[in-house]
Image (cartoon, rainbow, N blue to C red; front, side, top):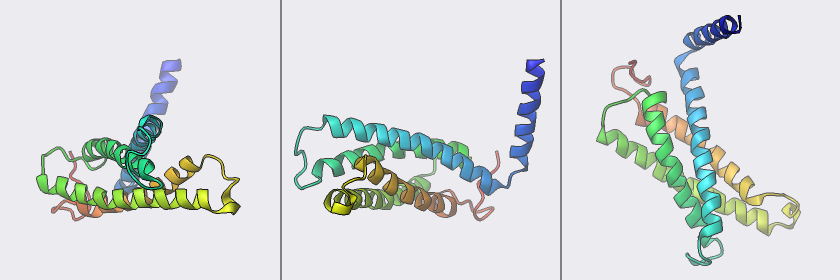
Length: 172
């Protein structure tokens, strides 16, 4: 009986997903993959913050910026591979698309590292915010959230846009 209940639930879920508009499916997939990329980014960020030798880069936040840059690139690898194949359903090797993706994420990297550094500077430098716990996590979340919205729009309407349908990916 438990198998029958599980099978019925799976069928209802599949039917609900099939009935969703394509953009809703894309947002759901993008969010899931984004979560994996953020976990990769955050894990690498924490690891690098705790393992980089002191003052690898000069400046007040040199190590933080280096750690954020490298961790961001690790997350980038996750998001490109999985979004390309699952969210946008692209399996071909398209160098132009890869270049558009890299350009998008180049801008996103600058936004992410800049916003992370600015938020850290504010969180550490403003006396009214001294009570805020987990300042590195707060800065990470703020920078990541903003860049996630930027990346979705850029991927949907520029990076993975197809000629045949305008903005929707090819159906497999």
